[in-house]
Amino acid sequence: MKRNIVIATVAAAALIGGGTVAAYAAGDDGGAPTQGQSNVRVADDRDDSARDDADDRDDDATEVRDAARTAKVTAADAIAAALKHTPGTAVAADRDDDGARAWDVDVVKSDGTEYTVSVAADSGKVLGAHRDDDNDGREDLAALKGTGVDAREAARAAAAKGTVTDVDLDDDHRTAVWSVETTHGEWLVDAKTGKVTQDRDDADHDDTDGDDD
Image (cartoon, rainbow, N blue to C red):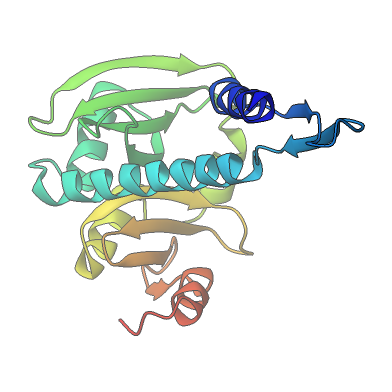
């Protein structure tokens, strides 16, 4: 009877403490105590946390795409509004991270200083601008030298492939290319010719994800 009470008490402690508990109980024959150990697995908790983080990122991306579909102000409109407020060269435009209520447009001045201009997605009104001291836009200006397709025109060109959610200067190619994300995939727009092609990395991903669309 005493042995049963001890085991029940230890089991309850293991559940409440959530840790590893070692229990000792005397055998029926009064011999040496026996040890029983309950291990609580923490790997499952880590896996669950990683899955939750991935789900949160997917939810954020979906929210941005849904907001872009219903927005009154397109990427091209936001770029135009930002340049009117802060003259220079637009090198990027994307929906912000706090509910996708605004466009953030990166504008580089002729001296290389870069500003981020926030444009309301529902009205096109400039909400504010701040200088980004961490970035030097002179490399972007050099990459765009001699090109004829700016960020606004790239956004318009890619809009035929879906609602644009992000425009960025892609420096991973030999020639200047705009990388444009839309609700139907990622596209590359040649900064000289304006030709639109699907991003190969995105296409390869589509081929291996089991989705035939």
